[in-house]
Image (cartoon, rainbow, N blue to C red):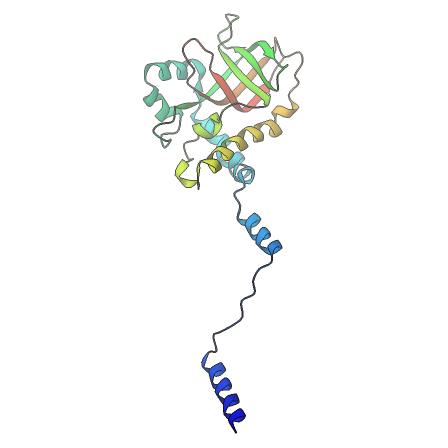
Length: 214
């Protein structure tokens, strides 16, 4: 009789808790897969905005080199609001969107951080240095985009990875196919971005677009 009563109690308890269910503990492989799915992917984030937003934004807001340099030298904040990102962190330096067309007067391709020196005013002297990779210094492209906000990122590490991903994008998109020999004397058309250089230094431009001429 006691056994029957005990069975009845168990059935009643089960009926009283219809919402209860056993939750499976995920395996290590399932946890790893979930973590990978939710992990920050800087390359994918850059790919998603590169052609639709980043390239058009820089092209639209870029001023010619002489105009941007004069504006940045006389009033960095005003120039930054026009050619840079007005939403940047207040402690970060201004970075400016720029375009230039000129002749290559020197090329340093021995280093992985290869560059070309460009004369834009025809006096035979370099007015800007353009990075042609494969190693790209700085985060100028990220910093010049006016629709990018640091506060949208989880931490400083993601922010840095995002900036680096832009450099990798320009290298794989067009710089990788750029010849490294016979560059001096050729014409070049560039759209890109640069931080205000130290006094006496050439602006170091990271290109978002680069076309070689004859």
